[in-house]
Image 1 (cartoon, rainbow, N blue to C red):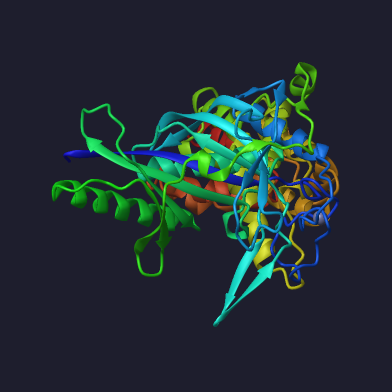
Image 2: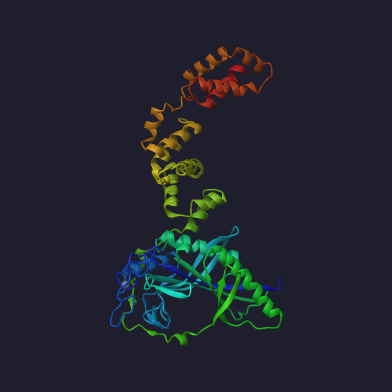
Amino acid sequence: MKYEIVMGLETHVRVKSATKMFCSCRNAVALAEEPNENVCGVCMGFPGMLPVLNDKIVDLAVRASNAMRMTVNEVSKFDRKSYFYPDLPAGFQITQLFHPIAEHGEVKTMVEGVEKTFRIHRMHIENDAGKLVHAGSSTLLDYNRAGSPLMEIVTEPDFRSKADVVAYLEELQKIMRWCGASDADMEKGQLRCDVNISIRPVGSSELNNRVELKNLNSFSAIGRAIDHEFARQIEIVESGGRITQETRGWDDEHGESRSQRSKEDAMDYRYFPEPDLPPLVVSKEYVLERAVKELPMDRRRKYLNEFGLGEDDARILSNERTLSDYYEELVRLTGDAKKSCSYVTTVLFAIIQEYNNNSVFGDIKTFADVPAAELARVIALVNGDELSSTNSKTVVEELFENGGSTDEIVDRLGLRQVNDSSALEAVVEQVITEFAAQVAEYQAGKIQLFGFLVGSCMKASKGQGNPKMFTEMLKKRLG
Ligand SMILES: [Zn+2]
């Protein structure tokens, strides 16, 4: 390859607040409302209507900044970005150009098995525009989204492949859910990403003119758009041309991009300080109170390196906070990270899937239906040879479906394993007498009959005998 691709991302993340950024209209978290239902004079830009900043948005933006290990500025300021478009009724957007709420952070993630760090340049908060709905020859306007809060997260040009981009976005999505700032669901428009792409000869450190790709609506569309743009730029340069600095819209259906406009400068937007809002001041204490200590990636690394889990288990158990916290609690109670992992990802997940697949009335149950303390008790009984691992699945199933306590279930179902050697020896004697013919065959060299004899002991003890002890006793007795 003669050329390398250099990319930076600008991502808009919808803040998960109940109300919009500067008014009390309901935030357009999902897009399932009737059009123009959640609007008022403020978000419709009526003259004389004044914005009031929603403090929940500051709260969540600070949590998100902390999760991206950013420096939160003690003072940030709002600016007006003026432009005309029908989806922007005020004629300007309130954003933060000169003094953003947070700067200089990083997102760490795994790309194809290798840990990588992507630097965050800055994050600012701003309000969203409405939505144009094209219907045949006419265009409709829906302002439900107008004034909804966004965090714009701008990275450094640290991306060298589409795998980098997708891994970063997936991690960003996890982080946003983890700290509660956003559900970051791309399909619901809660996460939107523009990619700035330029190319350069391998080994060069110069940054060339870049193209901003917009309208990327899914992870797979992002991958296709990057491949296409990389090839397009190489072709232009190879044929002696120059890359025009511009914004291009990706058309995923036709697999091509179209020029939307030449890249504008900040000057074109007539930015100036927003006169209706005071500077935003957040104290150091406020920021500290919203610290996000461990991130999904920290847990994933811990599960891999300290707990010795496999790649897949480490990822699955660190993806989502409630499950990860549940697993951590289980490990704290059992002191057995590997067995805790297999009881969650193998035993419990299988039971949940089976149940939810067969659920007629759509009632969905989760791992939380089995309290960590009860599952920990199951593992303790198995580790203490009081419950066989086969029977432990029955107990987890019962806990999942009907609740109750582990010990009560084990006793009620008669599953407590018998470890009393005199009782077990009596069973062994009984089996040896009953199956004298098989014993003789075994002793004559048909060693595969040993399993049959252990199984017969288990059967005779109604599944309650300790199979390990039966094995030892039979070996000793039969030589
Ligand atoms: Zn409103």
